[in-house]
Image 1 (cartoon, rainbow, N blue to C red):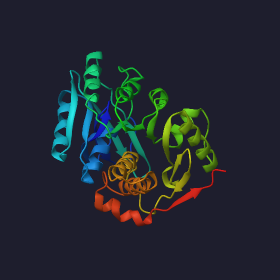
Image 2 (image 1 turned 90 degrees about the vertical axis):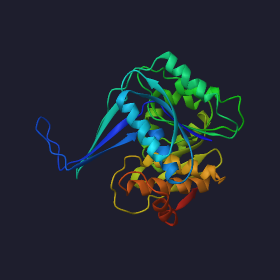
Image 3 (image 1 turned 180 degrees about the vertical axis):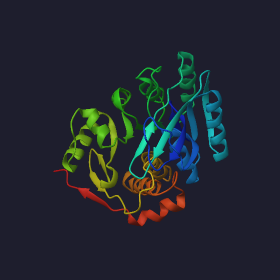
Length: 308
């Protein structure tokens, strides 16, 4: 089974506008809402790829009910812990020049809520995949991902994929995970360095492997990405196309990796699916379909880098 954990989900309210003038009345050209959150996005892409998953996390109020309803329409199973406060709403504004995001306030999560989630994690079985994605709400301890990972230690061959940042990431990665997916900025934040060159990216990704991540994918936007583990390093391209929106492309990359693993592919072949999935999402309205992702596979180029 594949489990995705979204501790801080949201309703994402997307707006397309010609421009944004602060302090003035602004006109929206078109808009739509989706159940959002990094783990939820992973589950949605997997569903588009005809792969089942169980979405876990916290939801509350009318916004939480919207998220559950949206997942139900998608055909995605969920086991969210119910909260007394409303799940947040994030606003994502796209103009011809920029993409701007406004992050809503997270609801309060109690110790009882956290204990309930940890009890669900006890159901993870041998050979399952567990995706831990996104930020940790301010009311939750920063070591929550560590606690979740430790709950799986008694099981065999659990593949944990960690896609977070800041202290929650720093604490959790030391628990030994299968894969992490920082972008260049997040890798720089982790090491407190301004990491720019491909050489430095690979060097610091190797250090992240030593810190506890068996595999590391560093996403680099239009410059492509890198895959590093203790034995090998690769640079993947960013196939050409017209950017529609970068929102969700990182989550689609994680879903591509999970898809490959679920098909018993090795990490390199799974990485190619990750690149195709991220690219197809960036060039689409919303998250990629399987057909769209598949159309980019033959455009994916991966080059091995000599580590010596």
